[in-house]
Amino acid sequence: MVHPPFFDDDAQLADRARQGDREAFGALVEKFQRAIYSYALHFFRNPTRAEDLTQETFLRAFRFLHTYDPSRRFSTWLYAVARNLCIDGHREGVRENHADLDTLHPRHLVASPGAPNPLQQLEDREDRERLLRAVHQLPEKYRTPVILCYMQGLPYQEISDILGISLNNTKIRIFRAKKVIVKLLGVEEGGE
Image (cartoon, rainbow, N blue to C red; front, side, top):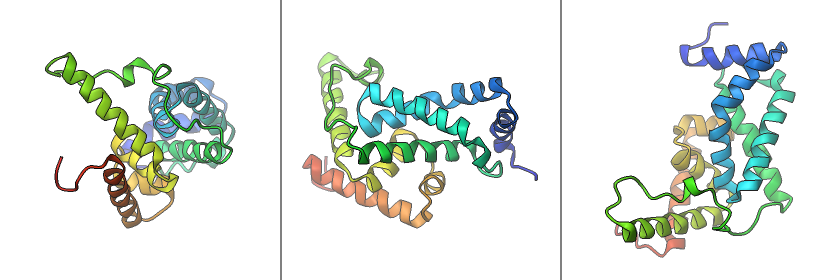
């Protein structure tokens, strides 16, 4: 089977890993570990839980690597594994209900570069925290696509593939999620 060029590296690494090449799997872990951790952190808002989920994602991926279809993006398959684990963790009540600012990793609290002054940085940080709390309050069916789109930077089509829903349904979920976030933040639509 011929694969599009962007599939080749990851698909080849996955194939080698499937044949027992641990270094190939290690390369996949290294490439995707930060993204999966970030996704889990945004989902649970708990660094320890995110680390555990990231590790579990890669353990499960290694165990079920034989189910990966090399004609599709490896990242899509891996995000689906992580998403399923997040949902399972959510259902089991393992997640915390709100963020503990003392345990968030400092890199997630750093203000954007070029912020005018420390007061502006603090305000920006508080705005980001309010937004993250609002995202965390979303039902999972809305939270996941928002995290994948706005916090992971994935395109709608890849989100659709991860969620196993149509492209149109993905767009609708993200649109509805934004409406709920606006309501949660008490911001008037069309204004700031």
